[in-house]
Length: 321
Length: 244
Image (cartoon, rainbow over all chains, first blue to last red; front, side, top):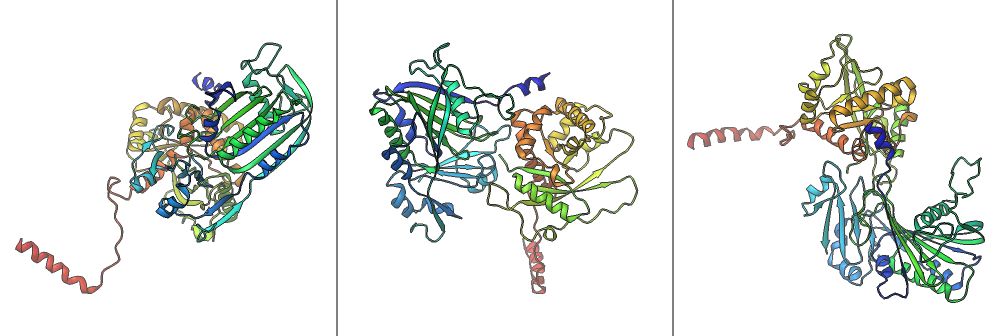
């Protein structure tokens, strides 16, 4: 029956995996990090590491404050004063908070000076702006994107709060890690694991899921992909907040320098998750929320400076670049 | 996209329970709820009870979880027409001035939906409502709910369907994404299932508002009564007519 067939299908999701080397001229790691604007969570996992180096620690602590401004009318973002003070200097990011992309109007300010508005039908008709219908609005066209080109003392007449990103660190003991070969994205039978298997494993580690598939575990039957090794300790650090792309670039470079001295770890990973309610994912590709609003990327950095880049998006998203 | 709405919270006699239901709905993420008063016309000359006044219910409306806006509460009237002849659904679809046609789930439908009246209903902007709280309470109801829903989907192809709770207690309400998943069991596609909790509900509400307007285009607003001094304007108009 058609319904039964439909129930077996999962919502559309895309995972794009590619491999390259940081030293390569045409490597587009920098471009992809810089064009993923609204980053909510950055995590990195370093196997065989108990203490973080001083440089990494400083970087993590200095991911910079971000600001909450309450009840800010949108016209403030397009006044000349705001544009001259913040936007022209570059790297000004803004995103509406406590708005769901699939229900309400959402606004995002990109560092290239573009203001993206994702509006519902009523607001779009009221404002009279010119835009185009969203690709992911279903039968009735309800969502529209428009573009217009067009911080503590500036917004002092509104309630402004400075927040520091939250840092959470943990050391994982006796962690089962998959064996990877930097040249083999698809993995090799009995020799290394594939990129999608690593992606699943990393998600399990971040959720704190035990990958042993014990018989009395009701929560998860997930098993670490084989072949795997057991690592005595691994360092997991998570920074949550509104993190700008430039800081992530610096963090990525510092993680590459981790392998300047010989280390036990065969690879380290850096994962970045975007805000579920951001109207754009990479550059200006539209992002939507169907049942989940994930758009994230992960770098797996090997000790020879090869890397794997995995970009994942959910149902209502354009393909990552 | 539209905000999530639950258009069927059953009004009981206990205001406390109703308050609990609205607070639960706000906590789950619904931005709009409608308190449903059900009237059965089995006995003649039954009086329709007065709708619940929202200001009596809450002094400050609860804020919807994940947003900064308070929940919007509407009121709704449902009329049960239980005539022995099953043609009443067809009459409702084609002639009656209603916004939603509720599909009963308490028993197996005694008739099959026919495509022509359903198509007429869809053209008129009527919505078909499915409720899920009887399915939570009882397993026989669950079977009837799913089979009636699947029958409906075969004919209407998932257009203009809304799913609501018909909850009488706070525990019978489910979150909007869960209800959208339930829509998949009823035979809706992913997009239609989500629309059943958001976009189609908005359409039904707008359909209700347009009943007070002329074809949905022109609406009238009551002007405050003018003072007696303006009576001179009337003769002036008449004069203009004579001269013109």
